[in-house]
Amino acid sequence: MSCKARLEGRVAIVTGAGNQSAIEGTGQATAVLLAREGAKGLLVDRNEKNANKSLAIIEMEGGTASVFIGDVTLLADCQSMAEQAVNLYGGLHILFNNVGLSYPGTVVDVREEHWDRIMEINLKGMMLTSRFAIPAMINSGGGSIINVASIDAFRSGWSYNIAYSASKGGVVALTDNMAVSYTHLTLPTSDLE
Image 1 (tube, rainbow, N blue to C red):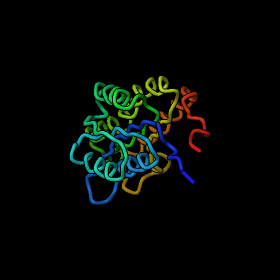
Image 2: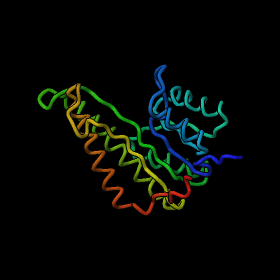
Image 3: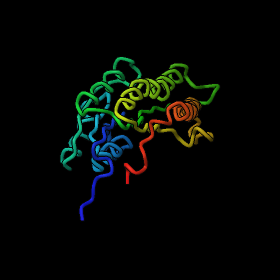
């Protein structure tokens, strides 16, 4: 009995796909899992060495992926990553928005530069990557965007990380709005069975 990979023929972008520690991170784990399920992947990270760690695992297991060195806070990089996925693999079906940053601080002591950087990376980055992924997904016949939020979007974090909590609350709102605007992009369930 043969078992078809659930994502065979699909193309995915995973942001924050590299790994900077000995423990597998969310981006790396997701990139590897998508490849195991048959998706071809574009591994986006600002650090080439970290991205290549993920690429090595995928290639060792027989998967197909490429590294894209870029910054999700830069419009041109986000446009280029969507274009590269389409040019390399013929389309785009999945965007896994994983990049995130946190600094501690309450509303009275969070540093302004920390607040701004967290909002830029955690929230603006997801908006920019989605801006270019959505048209590519429409041209590919549909797709799915997964935005990584946090329980801190709904309750105060243990580390008093007001900027992180606020940014993840924004991610929830962004995701809800995108879902309402682009529900026609969802892949039919039968494609994943």
